[in-house]
Amino acid sequence: MRRRAARTTSFRFPARACRQAPGALTVLFRLDNVQKDYAGYAALKGISFELDARAVGLLGPNGAGKSTLIKALLGLIPINGGSARVLGMSLPHDARAIRRAVGYMPENDCYLPYMTAVDYVSFNGQLCGMPKSEAFRRAHEVLYYVGLGEARYRPLGGFSTGMKQRAKLAQALVHGPRLLFLDEPTNGLDPAGRDEMLELIADVRDRDVHIVLSTHLLPDVEKICDSVVMLNQGQLVHSGSLAELQKNDDPLIEVGTRDANDAFARHLKDAGFDVQPSGMHLKVRLSSGQSPEDVVRLAVEHDVQLRHFLPQRLTLETAFLALLDEQRAHADARPDA
Ligand SMILES: Nc1ncnc2c1ncn2[C@@H]1O[C@H](COP(=O)(O)OP(=O)(O)OP(=O)(O)O)[C@@H](O)[C@H]1O
Image (cartoon, rainbow, N blue to C red; front, side):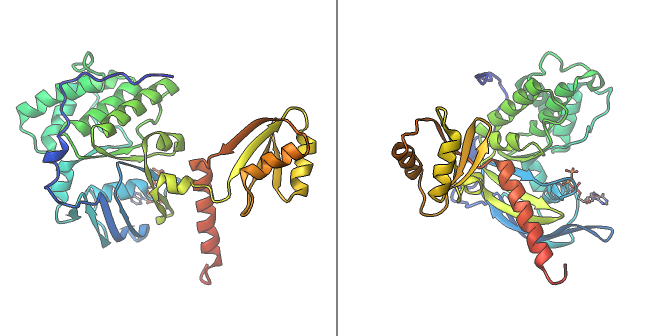
């Protein structure tokens, strides 16, 4: 297993104590009926949720409204209705303060190709309100932090995709944000580059920076996030903890026998279990009143040797698809559908 490299850097993340007033009970996000229209097209159709989390996965199919929600929460685009609070600050009133407290790594490239990495990152620091000399000093530190120390005087146009993604992360971190929005940060990266970027994001998260990770890659969310917000066609499908979402109310067990899968499947079916073949194994779905011990007892009763016995965790992908199906079924059942 790859070990996370210890990051020895002089780049300082602000200490939690100076980031939140003592006793202040700040919820990360509080949204009430947030709406956003683009020339009459409803991109966000009344989003409401309250969430406190270290790292949130923002999920949804293409066009679900993820980027729109991020831009709205950053105060970059005005909302048409409802209200939102980010880190206890309200939109649109505190939009400037929110932008100072928040870093944003956009999906698209957002730099001039002839700019050097250090100029690009320090320029973004200045845009966040840092004095020029401080922004320049911090740009050096953060570029070392993301692994671009040696390349910091090279123009961005000559960077590889992985280096560009790191430079975009550096510009989002330069001012020491409390919350970081990452829009598809592993886009275009090969598997090794993706792993390295995820390690970096996990390291930022572990230094007490809240993360919002918008991505189509559900395994990335499972690695980094403890909570999820799911959108579909501008509507909220789900918000809450990842563990709660993956809790399997109808648990599955994968079992395998020495050489009697077919016979054991028959015994299980006769005893009322829902059984499906699954490669070299059997998938047994337990309904209420059935327990894993019942499966083992049945094997003993029929003198079947169990070689494999593995409770299955609901993957985020399965949970996500199930929620989308549920939302579609609700929409179809509405009288106005
Ligand atoms: N500036 C704009 N003007 C008009 N329509 C827009 C604009 N930006 C986004 N939209 C539309 O709003 C909807 C939501 O777009 P958004 O980019 O927020 O979705 P997304 O979930 O981020 O999608 P993707 O995963 O493809 O990036 C889409 O139908 C999109 O075409």
